[in-house]
Image (cartoon, rainbow, N blue to C red):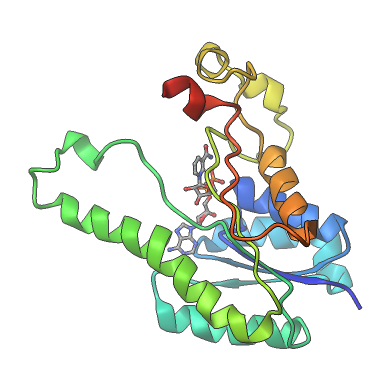
Length: 208
Ligand SMILES: NC(=O)c1ccc[n+]([C@@H]2O[C@H](COP(=O)([O-])OP(=O)(O)OC[C@H]3O[C@@H](n4cnc5c(N)ncnc54)[C@H](O)[C@@H]3O)[C@@H](O)[C@H]2O)c1
């Protein structure tokens, strides 16, 4: 029986690379994302052969809406035969600065704060909680360093800039495949659990 995975935020970037990796490994995969256009491209064009074979299904889901998460997990679990082997909480938002040059002193930044907390903190909890009844034993990984997107036809080497070389002792920015390697390792490492695995080319160590 094929193993099964739910991947949140899987329509583009690292998430799409993870979707591809798990499909290549023979998993049945259900993808959530809020971005309908990217989702359509990923499931209907980029990974069409897996959609056609019935290994891949996707649904629009707003990870900031707990009721939506619960309904979509139920739908996914039905597609996956009532069993979720792997959940990847990849969906998220990140920006190094407040929008429009604002500072924390501006009350308008509270809405951005709430978006961060709901998307990056509450959503993984709610998604994990909804999946628990369908899982045997969850594993976890966290903290990618700087990773450019998963665009078709663009080699990661082309995206490497001087600053990437400067920031990373590995002399390059991360690749979505680096995250997929770590996730795949964790999923298959039966005696490793509850660990934060830092996949950042040494960037954090260099900063400290
Ligand atoms: N790329 C990096 O360098 C880097 C570094 C540190 C952390 N991360 C985190 O890793 C994850 C993937 O990074 P990425 O660069 O591929 O990001 P990305 O922005 O390209 O992809 C994130 C995906 O999450 C989806 N998403 C966002 N909000 C959502 C919502 N409310 N509901 C459903 N889907 C939603 C987006 O539509 C998108 O498809 C993100 O959580 C990001 O914050 C990335």
